[in-house]
Length: 86
Image (cartoon, rainbow, N blue to C red):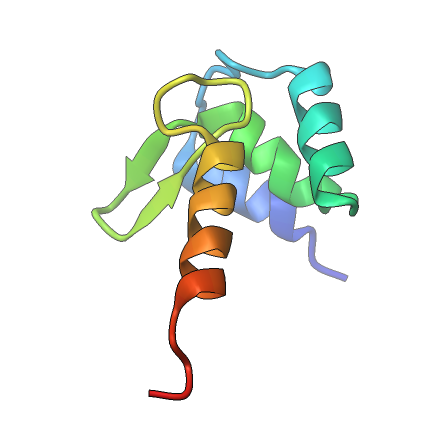
């Protein structure tokens, strides 16, 4: 079975884990009420915040700017107030 996490880390190279913070992840997951996948958290911890190839933005729950938790809240709010019938 292929190790996709290792493949992504190899493809992107060293990121630095500047904002790795287990407590930030615990707060986010507690607020969401669900655990997030370990591979997702490993990639985000290694690289975020960063935009990769102009297509994907990695946000981190421990950063003030480009905060993952805040982004999730904003998207959830936008979906909640949208008039889906109209």
